[in-house]
Picture 1 (cartoon, helix red, strand yellow):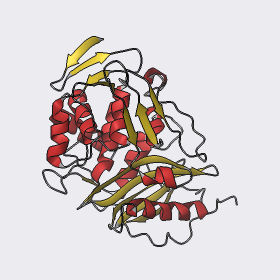
Picture 2 (picture 1 turned 90 degrees about the horizontal axis):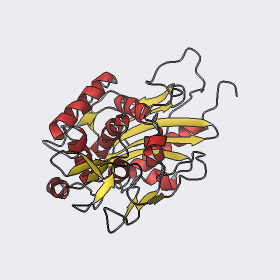
Picture 3 (picture 1 turned 180 degrees about the vertical axis):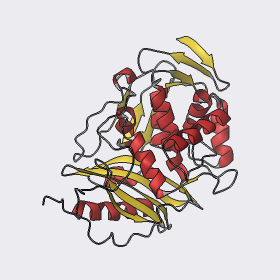
Picture 4 (picture 1 turned 45 degrees about the vertical axis):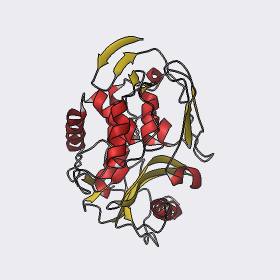
Amino acid sequence: MVALAAMGVGAVAACDGANGSATAQAPRPADTRTSSPTASPASKSPTPSATRPSALHSLASPTIKVSGAPRGVKAKGAILADASTGQLLWQRAPDTERPMASITKVMTALLVVQSGHLNWQVQIPKAAFTYAWHYGGETAGLRAGDWLTVQQLLAAMLLPSGADAAYTLARVFGPGMPAFINEMNATAAKLGMTHTHFTSPDGLPYPTETSTYSTPSDLLTLGLAAMKYPAFRSLVGLRFYQVKKGPGHRKGYWWDNTDDLISTYQGAIGIKDGYTDDAGHCVLFEATRNGRTLIGAVLDSPSTGTAAGSQDAARVLNWGFSLSGTGG
């Protein structure tokens, strides 16, 4: 390994391929995408797809006939749109600011993917565990001293929702936490997310429960931006990700996706779930069925169970997929 830099959280090195081998389960059969987490990050261009809209908008000639509204949705904030055209289909309190919990990690991932440095090797600092433990965050069980690629750290952050991985990535790519958070807010402003603010790379409730916040409308903008990148899409639709033992990490890792939609909803291809006491259950989601791709968000679904957010998301999606096209 050739050291590039040491950012205060362990060294960063360049490499030609993944450190160790990785395997992952592909999305459910309804999703026709193919991806391999062992593919060289260089083959997953940071250039976004040009076939997706950058924001929601009203169409002069809508492609989907909208009638009625989803039933039984308990989330206080929600939105649904056609991911291919940007046609807005349904919304509830779309511009009301609410905490978004771990959906925050989507912005962290977007900045990292845009850097294009998915091949970098990063040494896990002891401070990553201390940080997650101190703030009560979920972890990916990262072991101090291990070396993992940036792509593997993205999987550790997005699937098991590891705050230790988010911390490590933020400290490397800031460099440093304050600089990274500043870049998160600057990117939100560039995307037009005017009702969004970040105080952490992971959505943990500090300095207060509501310090990091967004709206359904802003989160759709974020989701549309992130899902343009194949490197991001290839991870968030996976049911699990395995890193086998190898040079730099004598033991392997296995990370299950905490997003219930990925394993329970046919055609689900992402994106991220989250929960805190104040945020409730939150899900930023995308699914494809019969050639139609829908993207949406639900915020603050009441805690009727651990799957409360995904159940609300499924209700919204079922309604959206039941709508007929303007040509049908």
